[in-house]
Image (cartoon, rainbow, N blue to C red; front, side, top):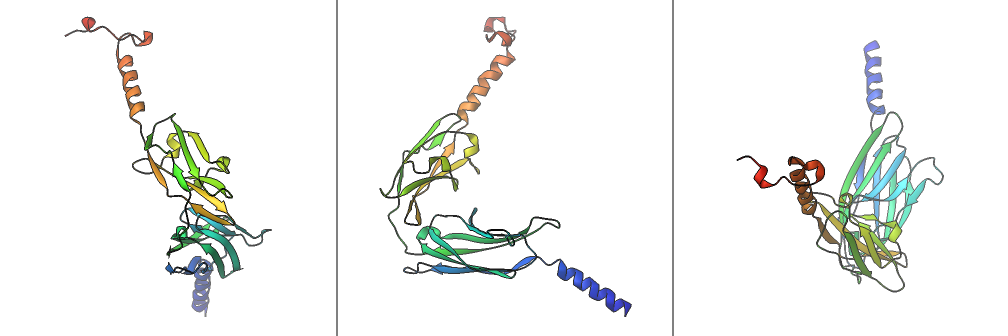
Length: 253
């Protein structure tokens, strides 16, 4: 009996530690003419936060016990996010007014952000076909920038829309509503290998977000390298403190 009790207690302990996503339902293909889909995440765990993402961008959040307990965020290609149900075992959403830019990787995360900390995640890809729309036009971006350069670009959208700007998928909220982006270049705007910045503008119109074709610019550190090289040459001379290079006639052969 004692052995049986120990085994039952051990099994109960293992069960209590379960924390995972058991099922993720995201349609693989959305055919032309279908403007809405339902997605569902099922889970087993005592979580404090559930989040839905498209790529790296969160578009829905559910925090049990909070007031309000849910919150949604706009993403390109998805005109509306409607909660059908979210509870202790599943969260189901309806995504509406889709465009082709809703194509991407969708992810459901559950997290326990109080001790004991836990996290689980599951992803699925959705392709939206044939939902075309005239895209805003992005112009003026140069092919490369170095530190201190001025990044300038222009966005042509529908006259009754609100323009928005995105760098590497993150909105620059200070430029919301502006057709002209002007920002000083910085290394921190560039990501990956090689260092690249991805710029996109979008128009928000009647509850829809329509993005332009994304354009890339490279980071150019050659100017900084040349500058550092000259500084090193001066420092290696005997008159480095005066900023004057040592004449060649004074160097020993």
